[in-house]
Length: 118
Image 1 (cartoon, rainbow, N blue to C red):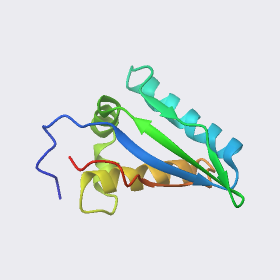
Image 2 (cartoon, helix red, strand yellow; image 1 turned 90 degrees about the horizontal axis):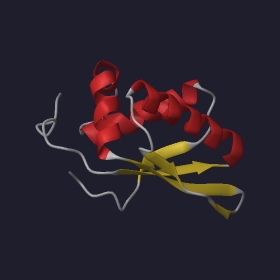
Image 3 (cartoon, helix red, strand yellow; image 1 turned 180 degrees about the vertical axis):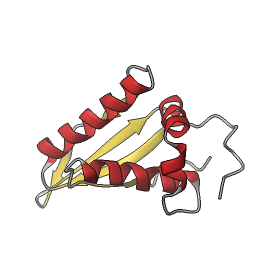
């Protein structure tokens, strides 16, 4: 099922990144985002904030520019569309979580509560 807003520009995606092993998981995430950026011929399109530590867990925010998400969507549309979720944002995050997991990342990612609907 396709969303009706594929032709509308996307805003910044804000994701929560939660892990008990921040250093190795953040390296995997940075490597994935760098690889995707390179493939999309973009630079400086994401940021992974330093973590807050609490009860053995690290909590950080990932910011992905709308342009970056659009380019990823355009190059991986078939895989993203096959992922569970009603809205594009849900399918995109599920696809991204799977990509991280396949690379050995143990972090949980989800849409941040402050991310506005588009």
